[in-house]
Image 1 (cartoon, rainbow, N blue to C red):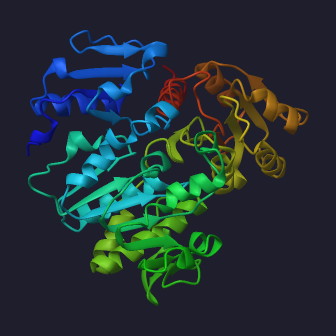
Image 2: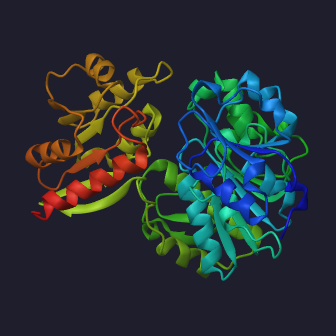
Length: 437
């Protein structure tokens, strides 16, 4: 499908990471001339075929462009807000032009796993489905605007939802707690962005606790809200999951750990009911789904030690959830990354003190704050920037048949490009050392 309105305009691509490069490829395929494009980024752009502006000048003179494609993660600075009427993100462009059924998903914890499990359920049921968005697959790389799929599953971050205007078939809203306050400024702004997922949705499957804590029935009186969780029609006990009173599969079929994951499976049960997917298909999808990479993922058992990769845990709340999920077997944990004034490290430390953790690897820069609050007496600790050294420490100190957990409670940028690099290195050295390479 072609978009002639993109032609013969001066277009800026604001942010040239994965999403920005995807936008460039899309615009070139649309026939936009290279001379009509400008790349804007804080860092210097190596591609000399496209005009670019970088460093301190990259947000100057934005009014000279007819259209600005902004990467969702870039905040709305005063310079960008001044030209907001001609600024668009990939996600907004998608919702403006895509006419098929969309299932949009967000939560503070577990949205990628929920999105992946939703995709897996629909594939198992035989639907033509795509998975895009915050999970790492840019919209404009994957979507066929000409021939809609049966469903498109979209994972949405608070950054993507911040100014989003949409209409879609169904949304899923999971649990909410304080993250990204450095970007949003306060909890009110963050929740406002998250709750924007309800607007324009025909049906919203929502965590009951989120619905009650934030009075969503009163805030969205015209929305069709379908609650999941305890004391709802889509719930579980210690034995089974239930859909409207009938057991649909046993808890033992679930290959995930963590209360947030067990809770969010209730949303999948509710979605199966909404789409009238048979119970046997729902059960098969649950049985065959395993943890998403870097999200409480069991890397394996090596030399009698269980290694779990939870590199996605970049906040204290996320790490607390991981600690709770492992608990009895937890012996070694990796903590630390960039410092952040918005991080609730005291709550993390309080949970650590009650846990069976005996060995701790500290990464900079937040290692000082966490170690000072925790106190290192009574623990075997190791301060390092090097992942291989950290994994070697874990092999030397973790007890047999206990767990070493990578769950750092801080973003990785003090040592790594991001959580994916951190998790990949962890898995690489766990296997290399464990297999004697």
